[in-house]
Length: 74
Image 1: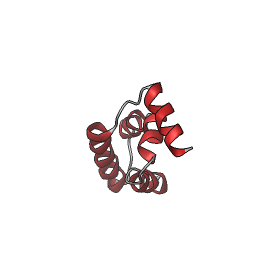
Image 2: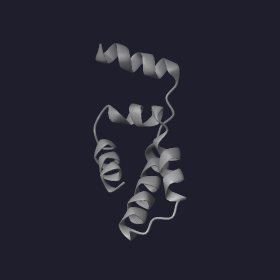
Image 3: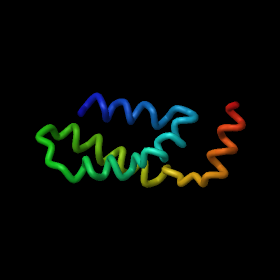
Image 4: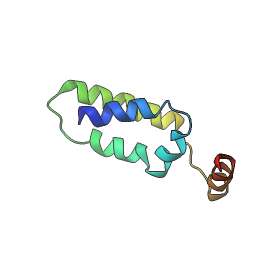
């Protein structure tokens, strides 16, 4: 679990990953994981941080925006 959260933390800062994170609905995934009981307090801290980040930064992409981004990337 720790590796997954560290991966999400690193990917959120990469350009181009924002759209993919939105596609997989990262915010909902992180919230569901945050609702579980974790013995390791570091996991809870990481989940809280990611939840706050995605609530502030996650953008809903329309299908036209996705098409535009694909065309720009070729």
